[in-house]
Length: 56
Ligand SMILES: [Zn+2]
Image (cartoon, rainbow, N blue to C red):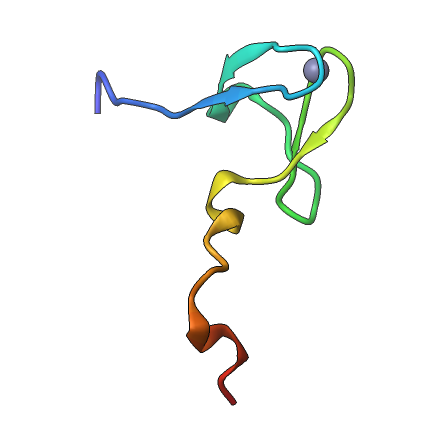
C-alpha cells in the first residue's frame, strides 16, 4: 500500500482541495473544512433517488 489512490475533498464554500484522509470529520461523518470550518456532506449521501428507500 505504498501508493494508493485517494479521493479528494473539495470545500463547497472556500474551494479548498485536500486528500480526504487529511480532512477532519465530525462524529456524523461530515467532512469539516480545515480552512473555513464548513461541514460538507459525503458525496455518497446523494444516492437517495432509489424508490426502495421508502420500502418497509
Ligand atoms: Zn472551506
